[in-house]
Length: 588
Image 1: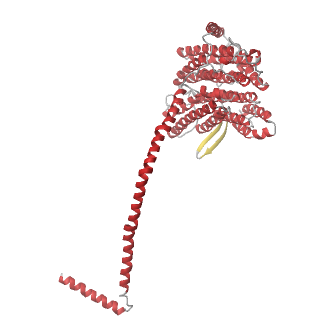
Image 2 (image 1 turned 90 degrees about the vertical axis):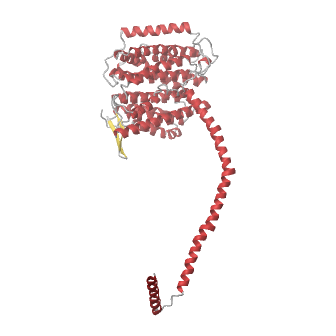
């Protein structure tokens, strides 16, 4: 891969973000929001295989390492940046776009990094930029969720940094390459845990359904695409073949689905399905075969598009109605028909319906598990697919746009730019389903898989058909209720409350008591001791030193009287002193 173009893609978004205020002042912000990601999408096609090597304090930083695994993620990340920016054209606040583009830059920088220190720099950029996409919603719940999000990711970043330092101490090298399962150390597992937190692997996943539903409408679209999929990339780059990931990934698929089925808030349903769908990718990384890594990469590509489409659809409903709870919606198909169509396309794509992107990607992972003789894992993945179609493919659009009740809302259709963004994502979902080779040709390894076999089609129609039939009979039991479902974030929510109580009550009270004791007793004793030491200094030490000095001076003056200045007197005195000494010696 050669080219005369030599620029880090992240630079495009960083510079673009810094110039956003100027673009707004010149009234070209909307053009700028389309131009920068479009140029970046074209630019990545011409990147050299290696660039941006810098020696810093004796450590070589590698800002650009490009191979086939890198390219498939760069392709979808820049495409999603374009779609997300178009979807958010109506947002006038430059700050939201600024945060979103720095977030994209962090993701691209992490994807291209060839060493762990560079990974960490851009990893933290993602965390600190994305939190503003939550805070910009400017609600109390959003502010609180943003702080929790930031604290959790800061904790994960510290674990990652600790692992990086320990690894450097062990091997003396920061190169970011595949780690051998047989030679993995504590440092390597710390790095993996840091990556797993961003991938929302249970039990360190609860930040995701806590934060994403509280983000702005546009912010949630960006957030669903970058953090977890960047984590999938770094896991595939560094930890392919770790069996722990296979087990945890399979658990993720069912865990996320189970919560999504009982959820009421539409964006929380989609957030839990990020956990579930990323579980497929984490599981594939753990399997580690060429087909599994291809499946993880393909599913990450497909997932970014259909998940963004779903968040755009639900976000459009929230934008136009101010509501996102299923129990408060219904009958919107008459007023938002295009949004309904796009949301349904996203729902069937995530469910793996034939002729959609999910069908050609998810099945690769399930087949890879079967080829690796992991039948239990394969069964778990198939069961999760059933739950996905039930909760997102049917339940979500049914209760928003149809449902047993009419909400009485009469909203307008979403803004034109929001519809364009949804159309682009929906088009890609269908296009990839019809032409899977477009995606397969980008994957890291040669693809010898054909999704449209009679067996796969029959299996898929059976699963989806019986799931739809089950929904028909169980619809009254699946009716959403306005309740809050507890997840593992309860522990740090409660833990934070306990910590604040402990800091405000026992610690603060003890500190106040100690302050009072010191003020009433300790301070008086200290002052008395100070006065005693001062007296001793004046009356004791100064008297002794000053008295000695005065004695020396007085003795010197008395001796001075014997100084006549005549040599014969000194000689006579010396002779007399000598006779005295001799007499004493003789007598003794």
